[in-house]
Length: 411
Image (cartoon, rainbow, N blue to C red):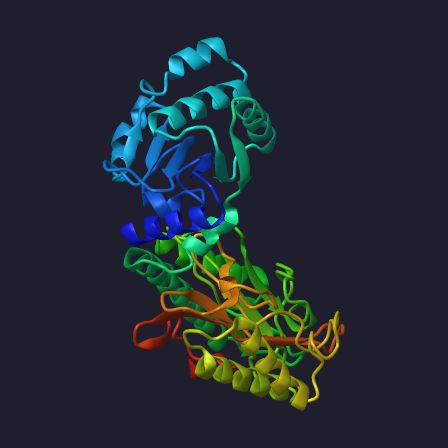
């Protein structure tokens, strides 16, 4: 954690700010959690001076005495409701923005931060924050966006964060194995429909099984999941129609992204029975692309360079890509991956951008997820293979070491 605050201090200096202020509705706010750990708080503020302090690198303001023990578990300097004069602000400033301005101003005073330029982050009530900042600006403060700074600071994961992502990844892998088990147990009827336990196998049945396994592992799915057969999987973010009966010979994209303390993300593609030639060919191309991405991922590599390498492979196979055919809805239609951590999508990124946000570094956790898509009704398919990986001191490690085979019986 000391390294993280050192990185934060350097980042604040780079943007010319005296401190970071995070206004959070809870300690699970992705802009706050990297600094406070697994504590449970409601509305709270983080004030981190650029140079830190002898007593603490940052201060955590909590707004109710009932949360004092949770706040103390953060290890940061504490600004209690009494120290913040919250009773005074409640009585004098019942309006939420007035209250916030008074409490934040007092927090600055207690943290020894004089009026100046502040990096502002968090995910609170926009209107309240705008008005509170307007009042503080009248007293000499100025504010610039700080969310990007936090994204950069938390890009390199700590040992505790890697452990939390591993936990979420383990539950994710268990859910995939459960799905593969149900698919492997299916019986194909003469009309091509798949049946399980004397009834048609629908997307909803698989989704129920995923929910059960994810919950058994203490995880949640706040953003849902993707279980998309055939041409539905040909549109990458289509979640799949719950009542749709699965059929032999069609693709089935399963993309799971549950959250514990931090997120995990993984995708596999299945096909029960013999895949048609276009699907088999696309699957082979995607698997080759994933292998190439694994082999080329190393510290100092630019994510966009990996994207270009994968596009080149697909171009040679005759598939349109975002580079060869911008805006295409067929072929390779998205970027190669994204960082994973406190948000499902964070740094590093695989877009064509300048700066460190697109450079792979030791400590990064990210996905590699090439895919090929054809949304044609009746004959379309989707193929995506996504690994969650950690670029550790010994090189790239898959945190989702699952089989890649289309045939669930091979699992």
